[in-house]
Image (tube, rainbow, N blue to C red; front, side, top):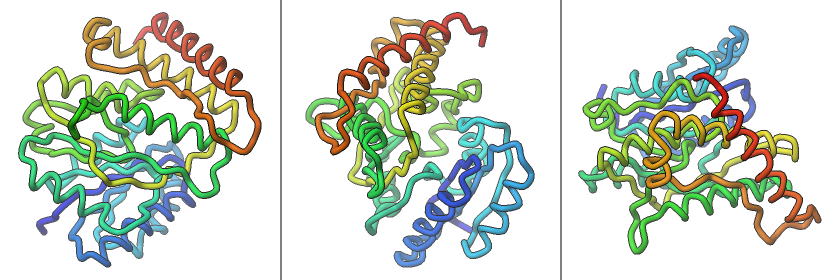
Length: 286
């Protein structure tokens, strides 16, 4: 069977969120008559999780489940390897397609832009997001905007949960997700590879809802892991290369929000844990 697109959904012990994600994908594919291959990659260590996923997907056409080692990049590579379509779309399990046309926008962009290696959109804030969750998603959007080349759709990096690539270009250039990265900024190193080879990525108007569940402790943990990710990239490619190609992913909180949590507290915590993670990353033997 010839598929228009392969959709890869890495998942890790989030069966309820995964169900919502898959329902939104399946509903859109059926409504818009998109012939897609749907791959779910379970990167948990529990056989019970895989069984639950198997029971979940019976209503989704052309769905397959794979297992891999823990780590989202290993899951992405597993999906990429088994993709039968040239256009491969990665969607995180805590994301939901909202309006119509999301999948078709990815297909159309790649078909109409032969020079494009990757394309993606931004995250939208979930309707039930708390203050910190909202600030985290808004920071992701701001980070995406900071990487955009002035006056164009071209970007230096994209968000891993809303990302499509051409498989044949990735295979030809031997570009894959680094499976040693199981912490913060997992997708960013992928774009360092692409940029070094002169491959082009673009931001498109294809947005989805990102329903991250986060409290203050998780917010700090994310910052720590992002610091470790930055240290890993610099050790792998060199500081000069990374500083030239990559803008630091920070979680600067915005000026909105109904819950009165101090902007200074959030910013200070993010800065402290990012630097701590960065320091620990340099000490770590990868």
